[in-house]
Image 1 (cartoon, helix red, strand yellow):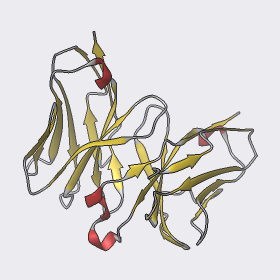
Image 2 (cartoon, chains in turn purple, red; image 1 turned 180 degrees about the horizontal axis):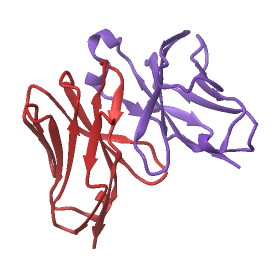
Image 3 (cartoon, helix red, strand yellow; image 1 turned 90 degrees about the vertical axis):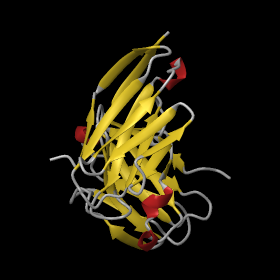
Length: 119
Length: 112
C-alpha cells in the first residue's frame, strides 16, 4: 500500500514561471491537506480539500496560489508567477475520515514533499 | 502569535543520554498532540501522539507527557542513539479537528 506520493521531489523555476505540485493520497483516502515549510521553520497549513471541493483555504496566499482535487487524478497545488519567497518545501498529507469524526484523531500521513526553488 | 511554541530550537546530547523537548499551546480546546520526526530530505513522520484524556504515553524509548492545566506537553527520548538525530516537531489542532499548528522544530543531534 503506497503512502502519500508527491511529485516532483525537486522543482526549480525562474521568477515569473508557474509551478505545479502534485499529490496522490494514500489508497482509500479522500481528504488532502497541503502544508508549506519555509527554511528553518515548522509546517504551516495552507489548504484542505476533498474530491472536487475546497473545504478550508484559510492558509493560502490570496494571490497566485490555487489548489484543486479533481474527481480523477491527483491533487494539484499551483503557484503562478513564482517569486523567490515561494521557495520552500511543500508537503501534502491525506486522511480517510470525515472531519466531523475528528480527522486528527488518526494523525496525518505526510508525503516526502516537493522542494521548490525559485531562481 | 504562534499557537504552538517549542523549545529548545537545538539540542545536542551524548549517545545514551536523554533528550527532552517541550511545547506549549494556546487553544484550550485542543485535545490531540502529535509529535513528528523529520529526517533530512524527507517528510514528517508521526512517532507518537497523546490525547487529552491521558497524562502520559510511552512507546519503547519515546514518551510524551501532557499537562492540560498548564497547556504544555513534552517529548522524552531515553537512551538516545545516533539514528535519533533529526528535527522533531510538536503540533496541536487549532480552531478545527483537521488543521494542525506546528512548533518551529527542535534539531536533535546525538553525539557518538
